[in-house]
Amino acid sequence: MTADVLASGAMRFAAADLAQRFDQDARCATRRCSVRDAGWASVLVRVAQRCDASGRADMAILPHPRIMLVTRGSVAVQRRDGVARRSAQLAPGKVWIVPAGVPLSYEWTQAGRGIRELVVMVLPAGDLARTAGLLSHRRSSPVTLAEPVLTEDHVVRSVLTGLTHAMAAGVDELYAQTSAAFLLAHVLSHYGTGSPGPVGVGVGGEDARVRAAIEFMRDNLHLPLSLADLAGSAGLSPYHFLRVFRASTGLPPRRFLTRMRVDVARRRLEDSDLSVTDIARQCGFSSASQFSTAFRRETGMAPRAFRRSRAT
Image 1: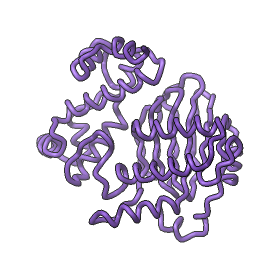
Image 2: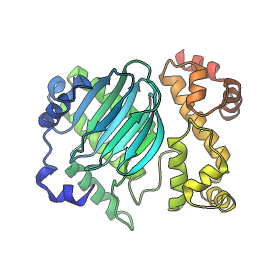
Image 3: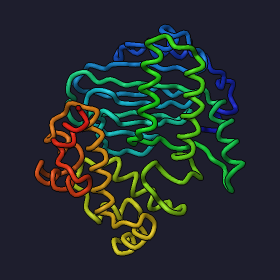
Image 4: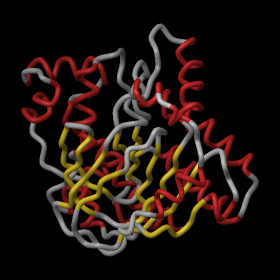
């Protein structure tokens, strides 16, 4: 959260005003809105669709943090977080966590597949600041949400999915308030500065170089990554990177990357109707057979058998 946002009078949270501001974006159609569908005022939840096959998306700068979940569609993009520019694959299950006052945009580098749908949740900056203060008291360093994060997080996905269903059913706002409080604590605990690290990563200590490499892996799962690429993302020589990474995670980088790819593929097998070949490609496997071998080694099942087991 930037100091100018905190110092300004823009901290007041007005869900109806934010909903109206989103409605002014002609490129994204609002399918559901928590203000109109459920009368919630303490958070804003919006289901939005974008149908054009190519172009650029500039996210409005807000004085409040937001969390976005991709629920439909797949597209390769170049994302810009402030001044940093990175390639990424947007697909169902991807979560974007954007701090208050941070500019964010992305450009299509590959035509998307039909309609793309997002669940967007905007949370009061004051609530985040209070939660961060409580967490900071328990740690030796302040906890803040400083940088955008693009990840796959089953907790965030479950909470946002539940909020979407609750909003459509007109559930009481207490549900939204308690869900938001839990989500703020979860996001700050796992993605804020001074936090132990993303869910499922298992990074020991506070090694920023390893964190940078893991973020680089997550952003570029769909690309063929070399050891030199990974070491370069951490600012280390390949030899030094191997030693530091294994000491921090307990795994060599290549095995860690494979596990991350398989974990993402597993969720897409559960949550999407993409073909096994498409999922293999999106997760960085050179072929369906390579994907099947890696998936079986990590889970004990072939991808198609795993999908069938979850469908029954």
